[in-house]
Length: 349
Image (cartoon, rainbow, N blue to C red; front, side, top):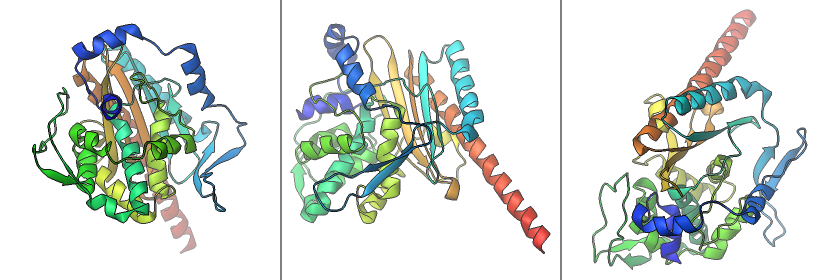
């Protein structure tokens, strides 16, 4: 089961030649699977705010997220800019498709371009593995110090290599494995974490957040950009893990070594908690994604970008471009707020 799950988590968990026979068998999701995915995204009236609560069998029901069904009118200009950029990249032959979800983290405002598209999440699901293992660690603090021996490396091709591979025969603590999985996107570390993670708790996390539960046998599991953003939102809210563990998880995400996408679209002094994922598809296309929290004080936001095209090297600049559009608009918004505040202050003096 661990190896099968790693196939979904890793960007290239198996080579294209190894995947091709299986991919030929099932080139698209069947209608039943599509119905299940769409059921998790049922509409609510525009004026209703939905509170996503932890419905564990206890007297308390903590609020995980708040959702509003309709996109914000205030963000329609941003939506048009994002859509226009995606269209331009399709015309240029850089991508076959792309989607982006944008949400302000201190308001209900959100928007999306091609938000209903489905993609293979790849290594983005490592964030869910981290959430699961840290949830277990809250109950059993000795878990993080448990040591596991690394016996042999996986034979996996990746486009973004690990900066410092694990040493065969060495022992690693669970905490070290989590850090390697998030910071370096280490697939071998992820494989070892499958030995200790609680699958039922992992599935429960998806169910709590209204994300279709992942079948461990399904190499073709797909999600929307907004689904992955939910993992980041519950960390920002510290609503699934404690504040201490949420802070730790986000601190690891700020150390991610992947700096080719969202990071290039923001200023150098901006703090970003982010994770990327890559994956081959059922055709000759590849996918590259990134989800990030961009810290801008009261204007902090989460952005989740998913892209698909023929060349992996063409996809990161598209993520960068979409990131820059969002960052530029938020910076302009902050400048407007500052100028208005300054004007008000001058009027009062």
